[in-house]
Length: 191
Image (cartoon, rainbow, N blue to C red; front, side, top):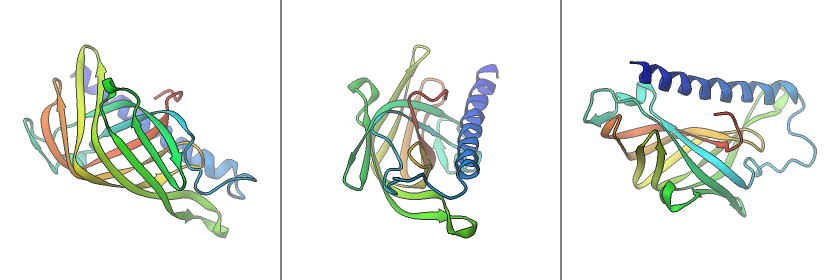
């Protein structure tokens, strides 16, 4: 029970962090992005964490070794840019062979037409692995999954992955989901 509460607290902290970051982005910059901002520059090259989890609504679409499975995974990835495409790849073999490819497809605008968030889409494939507390968890995109989401200016992105996604964990068991939540946050963030 205590481990479950700790996991829920971490997941809630990530959600609070992302919400606070989004609110800070829109309130501290009322005129929109800073001078010199490139709309496609929604991430920065470097080390990130791929966070993946199931929400209570998504868990209802999962099947496997336990009813309504909940999981949270954090894997190390490196983000690079090639033209208009941003790619997050597993940082090392220990982290799996996951690859997320994202591109900007539009903007969410607020009052006055200012851009609040960048709309992104892309694909996910491969396996993300996270090792902690002596156990390994993996998240596998079976085939290619579709990614949809929103990004903050030059910082982080989050959204939903849909397709066939398998999670394997000594703690959570093994199950498949048709949708999970994903986030890319800089490795230096507190979450």
